[in-house]
Picture 1: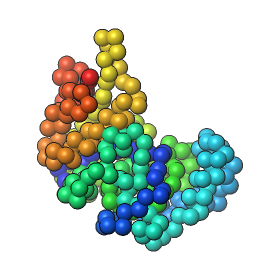
Picture 2 (picture 1 turned 135 degrees about the vertical axis):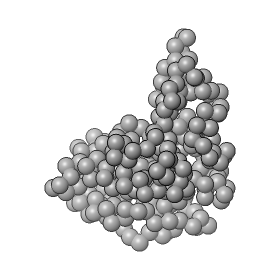
Picture 3 (picture 1 turned 135 degrees about the horizontal axis):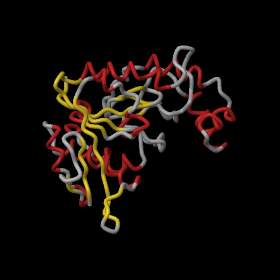
Length: 256
């Protein structure tokens, strides 16, 4: 079990071309559930996907193709290590492609990526490319009218099983994804991290910078093999520093 787990959101931008045959991958915990969702998503036409996910026709065509190409079993021919498949600002900050085997092993224990399709992924879990945001109003079945209802109990139980009873959850995920966890039921300490910029003497959140900083914080945790969650206060990447006056015991604010 882990003394802490750090949560990340996935990314819309995905690299479906690069494969990593030398990396030993693990099987996602909820492949049966992912297959259940895929079987229903495959029935939707591109035009229906465009409406459901509010996206362009070309992106809907690509999403439709990916759903129809999705299949088990996973292998290096059709899937990728999750932490290396996702791109976007968070993952630019993380720079996972530069991690060595020891660092990847540390990440495998302490980093989790929330997902609308897979529920929750370890960094080296197999993942086939997809597009399904947690907030998508998609009814998985008659009992679960949306993905939050479908995933919340499963994801919460998964984290509960992996995290020590006195463990801590470090949240670097967006609100859209973090709210898929039942925090009251999990009953653990949660550290929320915010990243702010000095604009005219006021500290404000700039979304693009904040996303990048979330990835940089995850990389800081890995690089320094953080053992105690409170030690992340030392985060100083890209000019950020811990702001004690804006922070609370469980709300860490970093400014630059």
